[in-house]
Image 1 (spheres, rainbow, N blue to C red):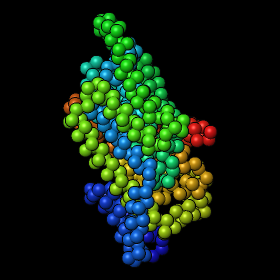
Image 2 (spheres, rainbow, N blue to C red; image 1 turned 120 degrees about the vertical axis):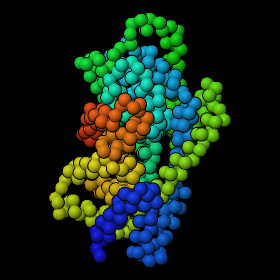
Image 3 (cartoon, helix red, strand yellow; image 1 turned 30 degrees about the horizontal axis):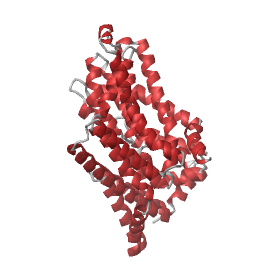
Image 4 (cartoon, one colour; image 1 turned 90 degrees about the vertical axis):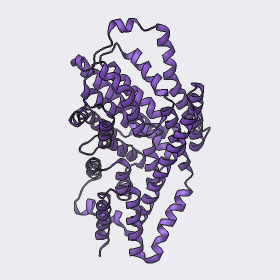
Length: 441
């Protein structure tokens, strides 16, 4: 049997097992180990052992539990409640102002968490009921919350970028810095879209009534600004020492976790129940990601041994005579299609053994490609029929918001994300300028 047929058989077996509902890491690891033993005998089992040793020795992986814990502390201690009240007060007079404030809230939550699900949970429980009570269009607000929560996988500290860094063997710090400007670009495009749409159709996002604005104490408005300063201070305490070279990435992650804990204690919201919940969730998610990374490393090692990457490169370049950019666009389209059925980690683990080496062989920057992959994941999170955020929203939304409302709500925001993806592809320095500046000094 040719190596190409073995690779196709491995992918086919993996997809078939996933359709049975098995865990992603279990399916990928099982297929990889069975293929290794079948190809190279009992010595093939050493591939999985070598991958586990590589994982245990990867020092930057310590950042993963630190940032997950930081995000859960900010979420469970309800520090986002004050943030939303601040945006409610300051952006109320603007058409679509509460929707714009929700996007800005998601930006700050993303800078404190790194996971999409946290932004979705906060948006659905805090922002959604208030926006509906203020007579915002239900399709507009569900789209805003889904789009805003997706920023968590791009703006640092992104857990998805940590996973990509491990699989692609790229520095986490450079990937985080590369994701910052594109993440802010996407958020800015969301804000512009909401403002323009509500200027044209004011009934979609009505302003806060004049009499209600008059009842807001000016001192309350000033006090609420402190709620917006707090996450900025936490983010600065974590990132400024790292960017200036005073601390390592792992040390900065510890600073972030301590700063979030200190803020919760200062607000008198760090109870025993909060600590227990945050610790349990951190352990569960960290273990999940470690198993996924281990399975991905094993699967990638088998593919390296098969020479499948060279075979795929030969297919695209020699037989189909495609140029580098045509191949890259085909890769992004395949991510969008897979995103209709799989989550971001499954997509990365399945195709990374093929795509990442091929991208490097075509002469593209792997840091830049990591940002493209993450933006594509944001789009895939919201594409029917099985987009991750679509079903999270359906589970959290009130009964009057139907699944068809949720599907329709994401159409303009997906278009905005595709525009952002095209901009980053056309102008790579949007992503690469900051890491080049920081690491090139």
